[in-house]
Length: 454
Image (tube, rainbow, N blue to C red; front, side, top):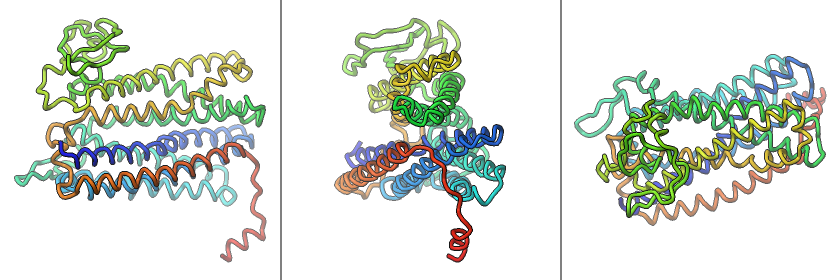
């Protein structure tokens, strides 16, 4: 693979990874905002309303950062990946356009209503605006997933004599069987992120002896939602995702498990280090026959290793796929353990006073970001060497008239700009978290008249 294509891949990976730090929080927070507003309508406890306003401000800051970091990725389709865009534009443009025209519009419009319309609408209408923000946010993620799903499992297309892909069945693309497991797994990961962040902020308040009522509220919601999402992330969504990889992308499965040689009754690897030169795993810790059970539902099932395929079809960085996958699964298992223990302590009414567990919740709040990043690395690196799996190599999708120097220059520029943006974002969120939930004064009649006149 030429240097320009490698740098283009690195640039897209960097901008995408950085961008996804923000949507994974907003997609999860959108659901938690609905829960807070629902609790307010049910209990009429103003604290739930104040908490919703607090998290809405963090949502808004994160939403803006996500929009800013998402724009450069779209331009890269035309600058760094022009041949891919030309060949597949009639297909992926459909889902990307729907994401912008429908989902993003719905999300942004009703976010404005939710942030600034509380005093102008009834409580039920304000609750409805939160629901529509949630629907818009998750629909936006759905259309993006549909785009990625087509690249992972292309359907509904016709290959023209000139090599271009023509959309032949729109509904096949929109209801690609790859979408459901990937969508469930992605949304589950975002809910885990938001739950851990909310529980972490609540744990900080209790450890600091500040805003005790809100700290307890945040921990309760974060732990309850987090334990459900963490368990569902392993089963059914993780299981469904693994099964479709098994049957549709066997080279990715082999790389994920470090399975160099085809085995009957294959073991699942807990720990080990891939040795590409000898094509073995060093110091492996295995559970016999479990991989066959998880993939083909049979203890003695034969699982294909990398040796069953030409090396040209192997992922070009097997160790990174392997480590990314094991980081994702390891942290996912860790999340289940944390949330189950925390839920048990919550049920026993001991969580709020058990400081060691509060410290665990606080320190664990960044871990879902690592897990989600590792999951996307597994999905995208495991798809290589294909940009559209099985039919279009990555090398043939990059722009052939962009030099490696140009790509490197823009990559350095993105890194510098994103560093500044990241620092500003962290400062804003930390300041907001330290300020905490607080009662906001309703606009006076003079203020309302001034705004109307403006």
